[in-house]
Length: 119
Image (cartoon, rainbow, N blue to C red; front, side):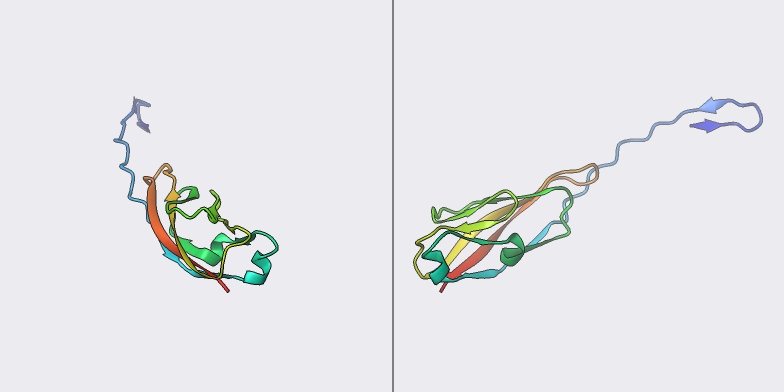
């Protein structure tokens, strides 16, 4: 709104809604190690920060496993669970990382490969 300082007349102008920008989400997979001796006793977890890095995400970030391996799961906060009894070896899983849209940015997603070593 504008107001004239001399006569007091007002004027209102509207502006077009700004277009949302592409999400700047960057994701990089890591290699996480789980000890076989511990896995013989109970499920083991790997924190998100030890499995992959997520930077420049605009909006709330969620995670979902996109590859099939019934012995390794990923929850929506990025925690990976390796189920009890998994044999020694190297396992690769794909995780879809999604950043929700917000007022300035569109939603975006990237798929990352995480390596789990059981030794």
